[in-house]
Image 1 (cartoon, rainbow, N blue to C red):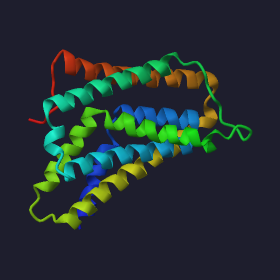
Image 2: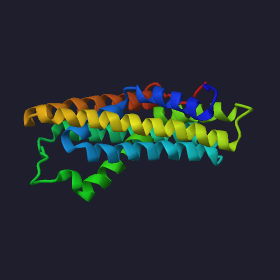
Image 3: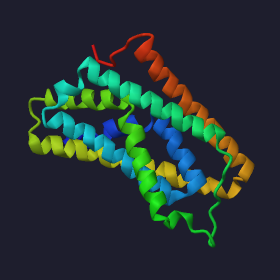
Length: 216
């Protein structure tokens, strides 16, 4: 049973689900401040970015994206994006509350923005790209895995990531009834600070340590 590709994929998805990266903090912050729908769209954006990394590997662009120069550019963009978005959360004092009179969760621009935020924040994280490059290489090295087996594996992985992110978003949304405007402001500041730390760490690795983010 444990050798089934989809079960193995679920296992890899659970490993990814418990990692506390910048996307995790952004998802929780979005779900608490903007509601479950916004968090759900962000979760979909995260999974779409993961699927993009898998497709890049599958269609033979693996060698290109593994080049030091390519990953360096991704690291720079990712670090700058996280640093900028974190700074915005730290300095932004505007809080939009959800209420029946102000159905923020039904705002299409909010949904699209949340989806895009999840996609960009995840795909510009070089460590997320490294994870999928590693998993893709591992799956490709399994001799008994045919095309259908690989599809089941990645379906299990992405499905698990989506379900666990939706559960995180739903759980965070449940906390909203206890959250005041002051708490939201501090939540934004804490989330912004965490994102700034991740952004600075990536930029430090790129420019000071001159890391290429390649798996050796």
